[in-house]
Length: 324
Ligand SMILES: *Cc1c(COP(=O)(O)O)cnc(C)c1O
Image 1: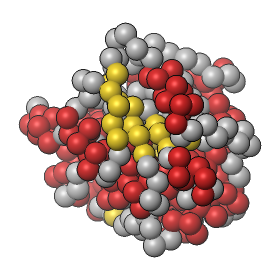
Image 2: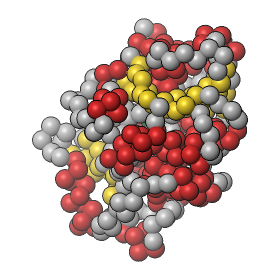
Image 3: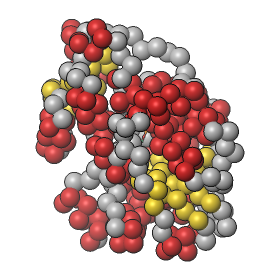
Image 4: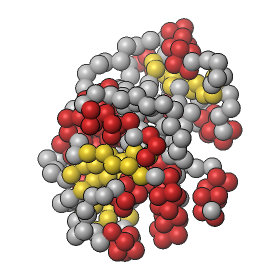
């Protein structure tokens, strides 16, 4: 297993990631909505990473990390233990770079998720969520096969890659006053803070967490990483119980703050995206909009960037959100 370089990612790493992703990742559109502007009394700019390859921004970090592996490591392959968007992102990035990929998933994971990872050519290894430890299994396989373990947040080049979504938004829409970013393990938020730094922007940058999973908000307040119990929220892309240490170092130093959104507010936002903006967003992808709307930050008259982070949601589940 190749040890992960422990160095913190920098603003320059985000700029280099943007170069690496050019022509590989989609430059996703920035949408506007007169109705959304009216609701908040502000000008909103939605960066639509639900339209990114594999349906979320995670492709950016995955590709940026894998593209920097040396030839020997590429031959031995990569693995990860996410069941969600990071797994799909690693699977596609690996296929594009001709690297064998393995994903460790719970045996009761949604069939669609396993199928998605396999359809991109990854090998899926399952484990029992209740009796086995996925990180231990992943480390053992990594050791046995010499594969590089690429975690969803705790990796400098993953964080740098995630920052390119905010970089594109800040480049395309000048003079933003505020930027709202969803927070799970913190990679997207940390990368966004580096993107702001790279462009010398003074845009106030806020993270948004599910109300029931506000470990990052607690961490920012207390100055150290706070670990919470397994949270219950529909935002299944932000279920992490603690920030990644690399992300926390950047968030603690550079972030304006973290606010939260409740599950009913996320559902309301999903419906707004569907009905008014004609775009499919997953619950976690709606965090930034819901946080801007309900998070108690005065935005009247401001120019506000919103990262819409993903759109992968099981259709039957999505239909229930829309019809409830
Ligand atoms: C992973 C993910 C997040 C959270 O990103 P982190 O880097 O873990 O903070 C937000 N939205 C979606 C759609 C995701 O897949």
